[in-house]
Image (tube, rainbow, N blue to C red; front, side):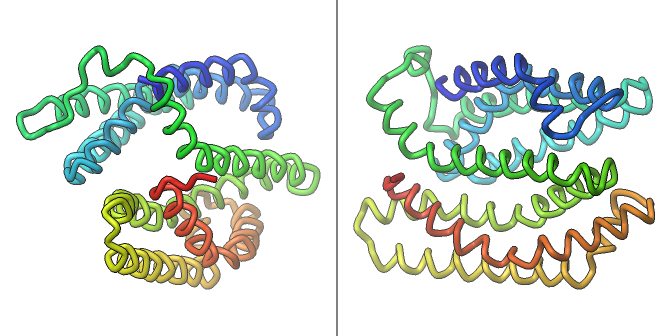
Length: 288
């Protein structure tokens, strides 16, 4: 309930500041129009997405990671099916892509609720559970605040990058940043998946004072995430053109994007070194 309310408040604030924020990201002219259409649909579905993500995390913590995965998979498949229909079939452009995301997220929430209330579930929210409890809300905010701040700093970093690169690279430079962010996010998914899976295990065993298990989980999580990060970094450094080529055949974008991706990727192996300990402290209730 709190996640849904906060998402609605933040979505409303972002919508009021949408034009200024999109300008900061480099949008202008026809791009601004398309970006506002896309942003509007995404913000409209933000409360439902927040609720679905929260319940999905609860399913994973309950010991039903497959259910949580299926919910996310179905939502992704719905989005993948609707996006080309809305963009190319109905010719709704970028706004159609946003509508596809909004519909998929809303249906994802419905499917999530079906999983929650089936016979296997032990988490069965009632109306009273959606009423705010200030003590619990304070604890949740304390644990979640570091992650939220990290996301805000990341967004601010890319705003600064967009503003800085535009005088030098223009639209091609902005497109290159977009490609780099997408590639890095995609290759970072295995890392975040491992860490997210380790968090409830850390929390449970830390609370039970099973230090040997805590240590083993930490070693496994660090080894796997570091391994994925090194392999991903090598792929980006050795074959940057392959990744950029997946997005566009423009030779100038390929040249700038490949060079920029190679530089950006040089520090990718450091991500698990920062992400792992931060997530561990978050899972064990030491947000500060």
